[in-house]
Image (tube, rainbow, N blue to C red; front, side, top):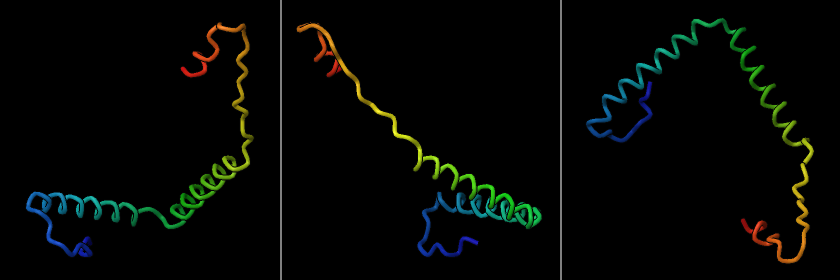
Length: 83
C-alpha cells in the first residue's frame, strides 16, 4: 500500500513502516464495512458543519477593543498601559 515511498528507510524505520501499513489496512477494512450511504452522510455533515463555522467566522461582528484609561496626572496610567 505504501509502495510510493521510493527511498530506502533507515533500519529502525522498517518496523514503523510495517506497523503503519498494518494500521492502514485495518482502517481500509473498517471503512469497507461501513455502508456507503452512511459514509456519504457523515462526509456531508462534516462539510456542512465546516461551511457553517467558516460563515460564522466571516460574518461575526468584530468586537471593539478600545480601552479608555482616565485618571489624575502621575497616577500610573502609562505604567498600566505598558504592562
